Length: 77
Image 1 (spheres, rainbow, N blue to C red):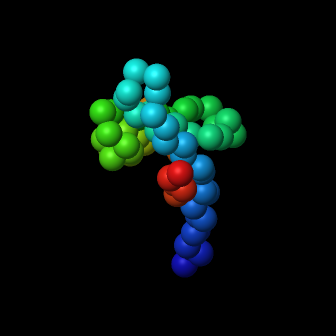
Image 2 (spheres, helix red, strand yellow; image 1 turned 135 degrees about the vertical axis):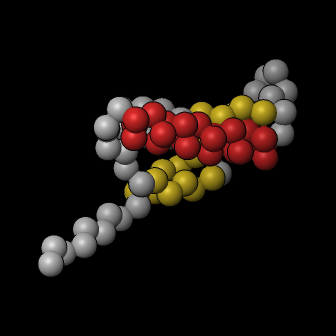
């Protein structure tokens, strides 16, 4: 029987801010990966939801291309 590999989640800080255009953005405050994630919206909630959608899309793309993607946990600020 093979041992089960348990991967720990990596925690990444996500900055949410209001731009000069009165739209919100949510983005990773981390450059440790070969990808970046961001989301945008008319409210902070919309930007965060869009951010999570970009994470799902990136995971799907990596899976289709046979690339590994770390499991990430987000610290929304």
